[in-house]
Structures are given as C-alpha cells and as structure tokens.
Amino acid sequence: MGHSLQLAHQIKGKEVLIIGGGKVCITRLKKLLPAGSKITLVSTEVDPKILNNDYFPSNLMNKEGNTKREYTNMNWDKKEKTQIFKIIRTEYKEEYLTIDDHDNKNGWNLILVCISSFEISEKIYWKAKEIFGSQQLINVADKPSLCDFFFGANLDLEGGLQLMVSSNGISPTLGGLMRDEINRHFASLNFEVIMEKLANLRFGIRELTTNPDGEDEPQVIAYRMTWIKTVTDIFGLKYCENINVPKLLELFEKMQHDDYSLSFGDAQEFITKYTL
Image 1 (cartoon, rainbow, N blue to C red):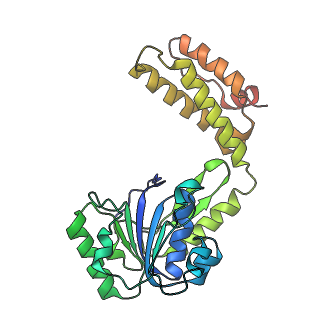
Image 2 (cartoon, one colour; image 1 turned 180 degrees about the horizontal axis):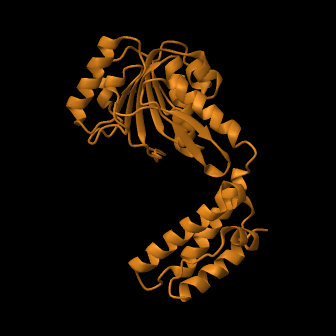
C-alpha cells in the first residue's frame, strides 16, 4: 500500500455526516468534536455513552420520549462547538445524504460510515460519490478499500502540538502502540513552554521583517524561514524549552543586516549563549 498524505485538517464549523451510532461512532466523535465539526448523526440506535458524555444535550431527547425522529441542538452555535448538531434516529435512507437543512451543493466535508453491514456501507459509499462526485471524502469503518482517508492514532500534547501515527488502515493497534511509546519517550518535556517560545520567536521575526507597504520580498521570506529552522535545529528538543527569545530576536536583526548571514558558529557555544 502506498503512503498517505497526512494533514492537520481544519474542520471547525464544517459539516460531517456520520451513519451509525455505536462504538465506532464514539471513537470518531472523540476526534471530531474537539475540533469543532458540525455533526449530523443518523442511526436507529444511539449508544448511551454518546448522551452520558454530553456529546448531545440529553434533555432534548428525554423530554420527547422515543417518538420523535429528529433532534436538533439549536444552541450549537451559541456555545463551544463540542457537541453533535443533529441526531436522526431512524434507519439510514438515501435521502439523508441530502437532508433539507444541509447545503449539499458541494457535499459534506466528511462522510463517515460506522455500520456493520458491508453491503449497505458499500452502497452508501458509491451513492455519495455519484451525488457529490469523486472528490467527496468518505471513510467506511474497517473497510480500507472504501476509505479516502484514515483515522490514525492521535497524541495531543501541550501547547497545541499534535502527533498522528497511521498504519494506513493495516493495523490501528500498532499505530496506538507507537503513539504510546512516543508519549512515554517525551513525557519529561514541557511542550507548552516549548510551543509558546517558538511561537513568540516566529511572531517576533515576522514583526521585524513584515513590509508595511505591501507583500514581503521573497528573499526576506526565504531568509526568515531558513533562519528559524536552523536555530530550532541547533537547539533541538532538549534545549528549546530554555531559549532566550529577546536575545535571539536581537541576533536575527544583526544577522539580517549583516548581509543575511546564516553563520551561527559552534553549536554548543550558541546554545550556551542563547538559553536562559
């Protein structure tokens, strides 16, 4: 199997259709809801854990009993978007690919099929492709041949740093083992501080080099990118936590004015001089 393109997919506010409300659905919700996706869930049965974990306002379903088919979270836009937008409690029908309140002109951002029937899953996959075109992204649980993308083993570290290990659908368990081993290996590092300092360094350099009268010159863009990468490589994970951002910004200004220099000298001396 070939390699996949791994991306940090910005899915906040984007519409996602999930078909099937069992245990596989829960694993998807744990990844999608923190990212702020707008989820419509279609399933006859909804795992109690979905309500017990506040994935959807349980009072909306409880007050209607079991007779109502659709439940819409009308407060979805008014709070942190970490809940399901709509639940449709019925068997899947083709019409749900193009439900009335969904702008289906360009399809769903993602369609996730989390049911056990391969026959029905395959029909959903090909029908969605027929309606929305080959660009519609679909994931059919446990059917790699019907997946345009895979969910990997995710590791959320401090400061917004995220890692993903993917086996490309071959062995999710192996991906999880790799993730856990990486987490143990780097447990001693304070990634929140590291990310904050590197963000401040990058932001400071952009402030120093941004052209107020228009676009930045290609030479300036290339230089600051190379400079930041080189400095980060010199410090490595071991020392990034202790970098002295103000002194590094002063150094950047000097080196830029010195004919865009990229001469940093001895690495160990550099680390000693520019760490706290």
